[in-house]
Amino acid sequence: MYPAYLLNLIKIILISLCAIAQLGFAFVHTALAVDISNGGKIFTNNCASCHLGGGNILISQKTLQKQALSQYLENYDTDSIQAIVSQVTNGKNAMPAFKNKLSEQEILEVAGFVFQKAEQGW
Image (cartoon, rainbow, N blue to C red; front, top):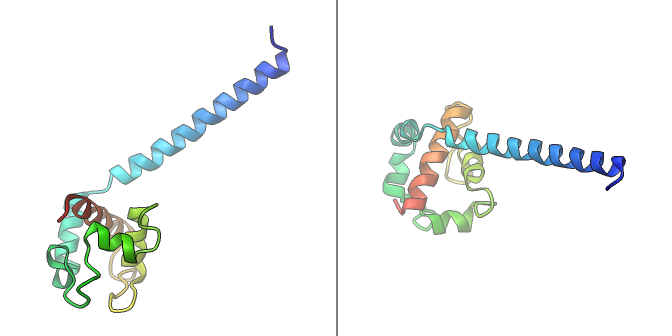
């Protein structure tokens, strides 16, 4: 038989791990709750003039293809959606910032749309 303090410690550790797992699932659920179809509409109205079909009419090598995004967006390989959100929010070089034009939810939705299309190869 194990001492009571050790059993209590194991209980605390297991409860903590369950709580952490629940938080992780909550974050995944939030990402899945993004309205991709609305993201497509936002993309059409705000991004397609430069990025039609996942391309880039200004800088041809900086497309929205998965391989290109991986090369020029910081942290794309570790946190793809957040990397796209950051780019859309803040802009960079020729790309304008959309933080004053789109809401955070709209930016998240268009980022989800771009991510999905990049994964599918546009």
